[in-house]
Image (tube, rainbow, N blue to C red; front, side):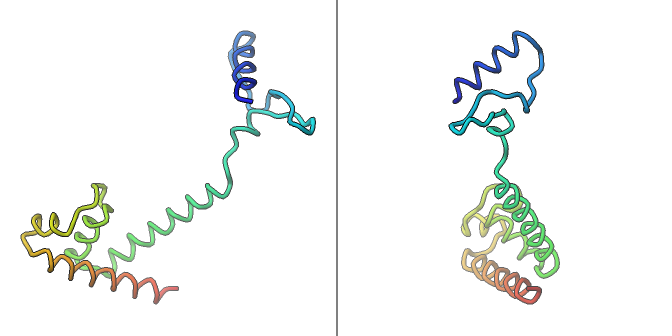
Length: 123
């Protein structure tokens, strides 16, 4: 099938500069025409999942801003790589903040509990 697509595209390029997604490139087993659009189309479930994920991330950021203190928010962002950098260990965060690893653990646990309660209260 890939070879048919490539051959069709190459032969069309020789005759014209543009290729349409609706151009027929062959037929399927049942005799129906197949176009590039049929092969290159996106999976609708994937798009829905991606949109849902983005909505959930936005909700998380909103909850973090509302319910967490600045230090708690910083620990969660660093610990789970939310701030755009990679995730850090509790030891690395402790060194950055000049506190003990066990204190980072307590801050993280308290922040997660606050977020959990905030999500439960809205659902």
